[in-house]
Length: 251
Image (cartoon, rainbow, N blue to C red; front, side, top):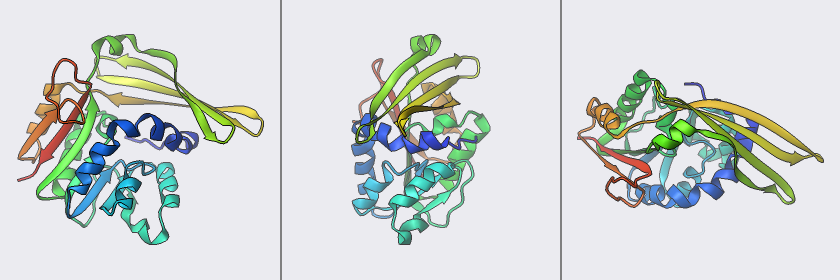
């Protein structure tokens, strides 16, 4: 897994996802973090969309991410004396001293693990960093078979201002690899700068999971128990569920 994030994808990340994602999962993860008295780790911390909110609410939170470009943006948000909270590491094999009461991997982090060995290694590494009764929370989307087969072709999924009077837009295409359970996602970014339109492109694979595949993976882990919900409100899984929200608990 090598998600370095192109410079301009990282540059506009906050502009896009604070608008399209915060209302979906921000309150859920913040509430779970604030329930914890001890240390929290966010794996896949990125530019700090969730991390900064939690830190500003007084959480003792730390973060890891594989992307140097995403972390550069987060470091600029943090006071120098708080930089110790962040490190460039991979969820597959990270190593930190504290044992955490909660580890979260929000917004599809595990979907970036395309190989079974990495998935199992990530679960093992996370479990080794948790205290007794510690929890691991992550989410992946429920696959829609019709959309997987059809894919998306040059769909505008965001348009807004990244600075006063300067627009940015993102156009998305997807194509499936059903045998390998991969979605190949292509982002085409366009933005106004220096009196002209500029652009950048990025294509990457994401691994989609089915319910019982998740259960088999978790059954091979060191977690004592797990629960899978259908949304961020704790609803039971049903035919209308769009999310797998997973809570794993240590002995």
